[in-house]
Amino acid sequence: MAKDLTSRENDYSQWYNELVSKADLAEHSSVRGCMVIKPYGYSIWEKMQAVLDKKFKDTGHSNAYFPLFIPKSFLSKEAAHVEGFAKECAVVTHYRLKTDPETGGVIVDPEAKLEEELIVRPTSETIIWNTYKGWIQSYRDLPILVNQWANVVRWEMRTRLFLRTAEFLWQEGHTAHATAEEAIAETEQMLDVYADFVENWMALPVVKGRKTPNERFAGALDTYCIEALMQDGKALQAGTSHFLGQNFAKAFDVKFTGKDGKLDYVWATSWGVSTRLMGALVMAHSDDDGLVLPPKLAPIQVVVVPIYKSDEEADKITEVVKKLKKDLEDKGISVKYDNRDTQRPGFKFAEWELKGVPVRIAIGARDLENQTVEVARRDTKEKMVLQMNDLANKVEHLLEEIQDNIYQKAKAFRTDSITKVDTYEEFKQVLANKAGFVSAHWDGTPETEQQIKDETKATIRCIPLDNPLEEGKCILTGKPSTQRVLFAIAY
RNA sequence: CGGGGUGUAGCGUAGCCCGGUAUCGCGCCACAUUUGGGAUGUGGAGGUCGUAGGUUCGAAUCCUGCCACCCCGACCA
Image 1 (cartoon, protein in one colour):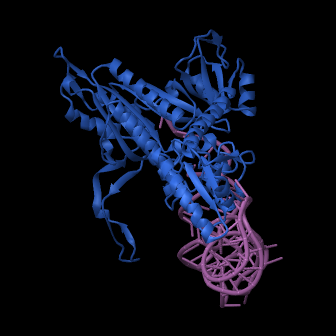
Image 2: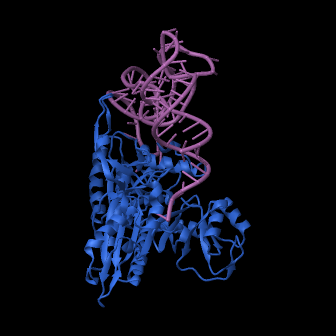
Image 3: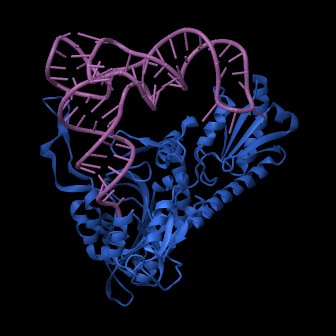
């Protein structure tokens, strides 16, 4: 098992791959670029979904479901949009198979060619706006605040479990508004929802910002994002929220009559986070012994391991654990009593550490005598002996402390990983030696951004929202600039 | 999609150059002794050697196609 987990220092990339696989989060499937999310990994995703879904509902959104297939013609209605996705679309051309008389296998029935090919959705703007056209006539029909939980397909060349797969799970919110102001407010609100989720549930600090035109969503007027930093100093886009303007309304002819009786195109937003967050979660906190999960998202928050020499002893311990388990569960804490007789305690300790369970409680004969338990926290590996008395309260507080601690740790790392530079030389040096976010002046042109990307692999992750204005010179061209932007090498 | 590498039991591998039916470790199963940090002993099971062809008396081994994975590049709102 984790005995041979590659260390982060040795090979970060391999460490990640092994961790995802050994912690039972996901594995490669026999379909190229597609993964199987295993039950333990999926239960983390379900927790994420539950929290986000509630936040969406609390901000007035409802869930709906739109088709997996999109007629090819829809994609070409919005020029920038088709440009952005054309190269990574899976296309359905036929609707039937038949038995090959020669081999006995199946072949595509050439008779069953589709009149119009269907695209497996890379995102659903087009089919949704095609649908909204029928839903919207008047300002009274607005706003429409809809979210869908779905899978999407983007035919990526190189894939990595959770971080980039050909098929992935996500949610995509699609809203329609009567005014630009309202749509922008929605875009910003959902960015805040994402930031709140990632920081307070995933315990991962993010920078809220806007994308440059180069990095913007195809079809958006403005793309907002939250950017997080991984332990290897690479940035990861954790969520995006787009102000789509009237682009899709125009492409799909969605107009409404305003209070003043005038016809106008509808204003739109879309926003999404995906199973990529799972990758972020793994890379944000975990160590060379395995996963470190934030208590708020851990499928199992507390594992109890009995230590016994005889059946009678085991029974006595089980009696005590039953009550303890109930006390904890009454507080809404999820508890696993690992009373497998087939594994020894040391093995269980290592296994649950690998799986990132925040708190472990060990109970043996010694504890029964002293009315104590041994409590170990995953984040610091600290062990302490606590009195059984009032244990549920203590554990509840410990979980909160762990949640806070891993957030603070990630935040300190992030703060330490933002470097201000004023010259291109410095810029390249920081990228080579330290990585992280590099805060630098940029002249605002796509050409400069592209050249920096070509030369250093670093892209502008975002223009932070709370960015202070500051006179400066572009690190590449020396042209005047009014603010710093965040560069990084990104996943 | 280009360059490089790998594919042998659930996992990790030896064997391949130089052709003769597959090695070792972990894991798995049974029993016993064990159990406060990844137990030990004894016995046992498990293989279309990625896949499809070809060469050969004979292919894990040589040749060709294909597939998958890893690394590098291109690509990646």
